[in-house]
Length: 143
Image (tube, rainbow, N blue to C red):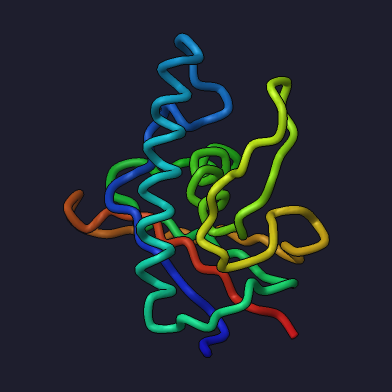
């Protein structure tokens, strides 16, 4: 079992995922759902070699942007990565106005609350071509 897993998102995350994104909520929700589904696929691929994986209880999260042009500032980068981080959580039941709903998750870690995510860092590296631009989200288990 590895001590860490990573996913790579090509390019830069959609501006519609950011906390300050304008526009109608349905447009932003569609972008969020798309990123969540993409994140689920990427996390499940990362977990495929480890079928007996148990969600980690304490983790460190690192977001690394490989940028070309202009990098995102930290708060926008973290805001845009929220759906991808949510996709790595364990499945859970959430309460809504319409009753309980099962929220899907890949099960890399328990949840994204402060009890589980002990630290969060961002890093940046410049690349020469836009084709090389990406964001790598890494989750490492803490003992």
